[in-house]
Structures are given as structure tokens and as C-alpha cells.
Length: 318
Image (tube, rainbow, N blue to C red; front, top):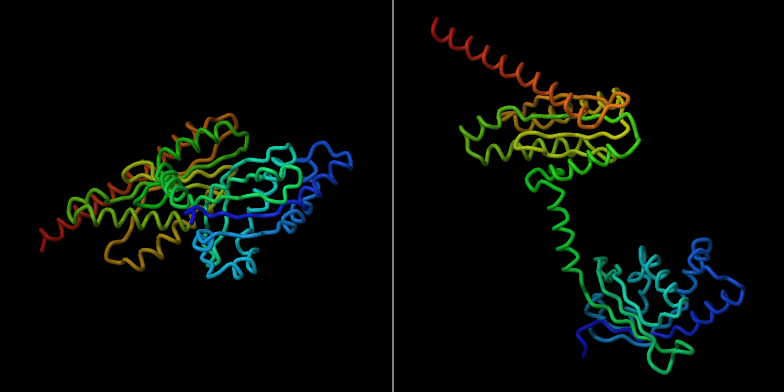
């Protein structure tokens, strides 16, 4: 009747396996499992599940105990081997009660984040023939934590990284010796006009689209971020001038494709690039890209002004 998933298991064969390793004169069990990962898998195969409760069947979407036991490999897989290794190390050091957060999988394939509490039951300290494993479902909490972490590093509107992440990444690049590094600074043209004339929903749509373009163009180890209202940056560790030129070309190609789908509201950007010089700080490198972007921005506005004046003269002549 417990609301927590409970497993009663027999670890006696695992105790014998650990003792056999100790008898061979092994002192550092962590190093031993580094060299012999197959030993961890052997121990996993020697676990005998005696019984589980109804909460276990509910947690892992199992219709009955028989199905769960038959598909136990679907529950304990992937990262579970790493967590089980840590359990073995705890047992090696005589800690018969311990707990840790692990990832299991329900039979439908969905993840289950659980707090695992392991205890050898009283009277079985000598043989580990009866142990209890309690699993508390913390999936909702872990998802909430992951989302809060995502919000701390991402811009919700564009799905790109935010300014806080950008600053951290810039500082990280400053500490690293990987050089050269390059930066692309981008400004979305016409955002204020779109907001003023069509409303902020139209402006947000332009920002989202530019986020899609940069998201498609930029992959790790590079990072794209929205660092201001209409300003974006791409940081490229280890990238030379040729690499940043290729990045600019890719952004331009994806921008054209995006504009084909939104021909009534084409995206326009001003862009500046820079690649670090020997001994140059990251801040200085980014500043050069920013200056180049603003030069292109001024040229854009000058061109727009010239077009408007030419249009006004034509209308006056007509």
C-alpha cells in the first residue's frame, strides 16, 4: 500500500562477487571498475528481484509483475550502469544504506527521475540476501529544475541563448587558450518600424524568425544569443576568418529561404564580424565586430533615406 515504489531484492551474489575481487588483493575498487566495466554489468545481471509493490507497477507503466520482470532491461538501461557502479562503490566501502538520484525508464519509454534509497534489511548484513530499494518519483521536480535552468540561459521568444549566457561564454573564452576565436554581431533592421506601424506582435514575429535562422545556422561548439532587443551575437571558439565567412554565408542562405516563405515581411539584418588577433582580448574582438555592424547599419539607413527621397521626388514630378 506504500505510495513509494518498493523493491525487495537479493544481493547475495553481488556480495560474493565483491568479496572475490577483494580476495584478489584489489584495494581501489573505483579504478578496478574503470578498467573492468564488464564487472559492473555482471553484478547488474546477478540482482534477483523478489517482489515489488503496486506503486512500482504504476510508476513504470507495467500491467503486472510478470511483465515488469520480463522487461526489466527496459527499465534499467543507459545511464543506469553508471549509477549502479556508484552503488557498488558504496557497498564496497561498507555503506549498507545510501541514496542518490538516478534515471530509470517506464515501459512506454518515458524517463523517470527517481530518488533511490538502498538499504540492507536488518539481520542480513552478513549476506545481503534481503535488501530494500525505495524509489521516489522526482520527475516533475527535475523537469521544473531543467526548465528554470533553461530560462536562466535562454531567451524565451527566440529560443536562442540570452545575454547572461553570452557574457558567461565570453568570459569562458577569455580564460581558454583556444585561439583564434571569432564573433558575428547582428542587428535586426526595421524592428522599431514594425512595432510602431504593425504592433509588437509583428515585431516579435520578426525576432522569432531571426531566431529560427540563427538556430539553424549555428551548432556547437558555436553559440548564438540574443543580447539585446534587436541585437544578436554568434560566438565561435577556435574559428578563423574562413570559418566565420562560411558562417556568414550560411546565415545569408537561410535568411533568403526564410524570406521566401514570408515575402510580405522580409527580414533584413546588419552584420559585423571579427576574428581575434594574437594577444587580443575577447571584449576587444567583439567590439570590432560591433563597430563593423554599426557601419553596415548606417549604410542601410542611408540607403533607405535615399530611396525615400527618390520616391518623394518621383511623386512630386508626377
